[in-house]
Amino acid sequence: MKNGENLGRLHGKVAVVTGGARGMGASHVRVMVREGAKVVFGDLLETEGGALARELGENVAFVRQDVTRSEDWEAVVRTAEELFGHVGILVNNAGIAPAGSFEETTEEQFRRTLDINLVGSWLGIKSVLTSMRAAGGGSIVNISSAAGLIGNKNYAAYTSSKFGVRGLTKAAAAELGGDGIRVNSVHPGMVATQMLDDTPADLLAGAVKSIPLGRIAQPEEVSNLVLFLASNESSYSTGSEFIVDAGVTAI
Image (tube, rainbow, N blue to C red; front, side, top):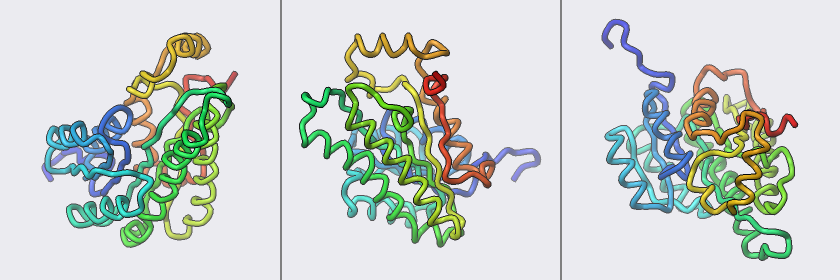
C-alpha cells in the first residue's frame, strides 16, 4: 500500500447483493465496489446485470438469480467463494411492489410478493450462514421499507412483506449474534428507481406532497446507509431499523 492510500471502508470484504442489476441494487453494488469490496450480485435481468459487471470490472461478478429458488442462492454463494472468498456481507435488496386494492389484488400476486420479498430474504440469510461463519462473522442488511413501519393504502401485499422482513431481521439478529453476525433492516421511503414506474401518477404526486423534505430520494442516499451497516463502523448495531425516508414515518 502506498503511503496515505485509502483502501476503502469495505476493503477485504466479500459481498452478495440481490436485485443488483439496476435501480437501488445497482447503486449498492457501485458504492460497495468503490469502497473496496468484492461483490457478487444476482438478478433476473441478465442484460443489465452483465453490462454493470463489465463496467465495474474484475472485482464484480453477476449471476442470474431468482431469489425464491434455493439452488440459485447456492450458485451465488458458490461463485462468491470461488472467485473472492468467504461472504462477509449480504444485502437482501431484491423486491417487488405491486399496487392494488384488496379486491384488485389476486391471491397469486399476494403470494408472489411474499415469496420474493420475504421468503427470498429468509433464503438469503440461510444460504450465507456457513460462508459467513467461516469468515468469522459479518453483516446482513435487509432492505425493508417505510411500508415496513406504517400501513400503506393499496399496497397490502408489499406492506405485509416488508413488515415481515422487519420481523425476520429481529429474529435473525437474536439467533446469530453469537456467531458475530449482525442483522439490520433499512427502511427507505420513496426512491427514484424503475420501481416507481409502476406507481399510478396520481398516487405518486400525492405521496410526494406528504414528504416533509419535499422530494424523492436518490438511490445513493440509501446506499450510503447500507454502506455504514455493511462496514465495521456499525459494529455494535444489530436487530435494528434504520430509516431513510425524509420524515415520512415521523408524521
